[in-house]
Image (tube, rainbow, N blue to C red):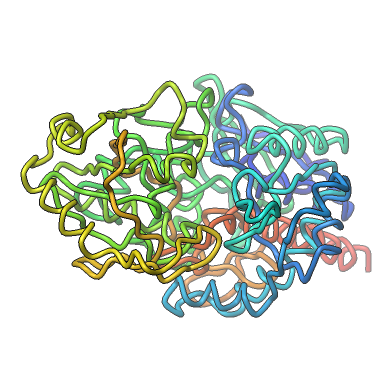
Length: 503
């Protein structure tokens, strides 16, 4: 069945953070909007629903923080040093962690529009809170923030999705659930609609512009193996099962230019026995991100990376790949009692793969799949190499190193005080880095570098921002920034077309 619906200006494919920001932005700029969500309502929101809600943005002091979170408790405010996170710092982080490959034009939009976009989100009904529980440690009675992150969304990912989609519905945006986009409809070179599948049948929905914001290909095992490489089909998926790369494939089918790091992905240490896809009841708590305070060992009983190379915000998204490359695609994170109080809340959930013992020898006996004798030798060598004369400081790159191979650059503590704990992790893939080439107004470009009329994109399926690695909290910010841009771009293109027609 083909249905022309001239009342729909913009169709947004997806219903997560980027999609909702695009839909709201387009609606605020005068366009009528419909959203398509492949998932049922209780699983809506794509990967956004599974996030912790941290958002990286530029803040030059407490006034910028308060412009996003105006209701900070005065006592908390008086006992907190937020520091700053300047544009230069954001740029430096993006270029450093991507090995200077990030697209400079897109990166500039991301950085310079980060604070205004969070302020805009607040105006649309999104509530934020400070990240005291995740990004600050108390030193001498005063909280000190680290790692460039100061705020997160109230209620995490589920709260973000609910607040954004509630706002969208209040603005008259209709959301179709269990409605998967199948292909784009074209009239000559212009995109004029989407073919959708619902309840086993297909139909055409026509519009004046389409915004693709339906995620990368992380939930597609075949595409992971094809583009990311061997054994990536064995990785766990941290989030939704619905991000199968359909939006990317639809765009490529109409001549869109592939862009970005197609063999790269955001991938972390994730509980070894977690389910194949994300569990909303657990959320992001299967992640295990306190590794800078311990050591990580593989099946051979050996360390294989620098657990303290940088703040975990700048290493966690690449260490999933390192774990996947180990024998059996797993590792154990090992901690002793001296740092147990620093472990994040995710280490205390019920659904966890954990062993503990009062002695290191007893712990070694419980590390399933690990060479016991080699592990004990590794611990002994590591302990002997720790610079115990350097003070330990979890808020700073403290230079407390272990001069062994591989070196641990910061936060090295001897593993010698029981009880000892160990947690089994594997690779959990979050999102893929390869995607579509877009212009600075969010319009998808073709393989000749020309804009495809009527087609815009935002979120994970935008290529060119992230290579090799990723600064924590940048994904939601990127989705919001480029979602807002795509919505504005689509509405402006429609208004221009109407203006020409009227003339």
